[in-house]
Length: 122
Image (tube, rainbow, N blue to C red; front, side):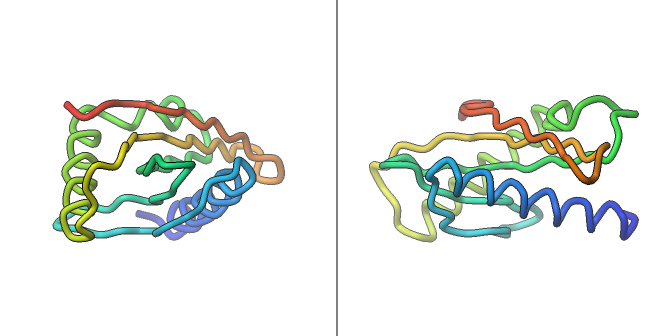
């Protein structure tokens, strides 16, 4: 991955965290790594634990950012979320999976799309 893409990804995650906090979410963890994957943001809203995938694009050459969340990617995120729950001994907690798509084509005024309940545990 080019450094520009990495920097855009980092900025996208920062913007996503700011958006979640503005919406009243409490950020519990960022960049939780397990096995060969990662969950970008783990947050809480009320009693719901939310696993958030942030996808950032600097142009729409390959479609909108959210289009990159394939079934395989969803399956990986679900596996990592289950590991997080197991490791932290979290039981009987309502969970959901959100996506925050960040379009940074206009770097000064990026567009964020928070997709609540973007996919479900298969």
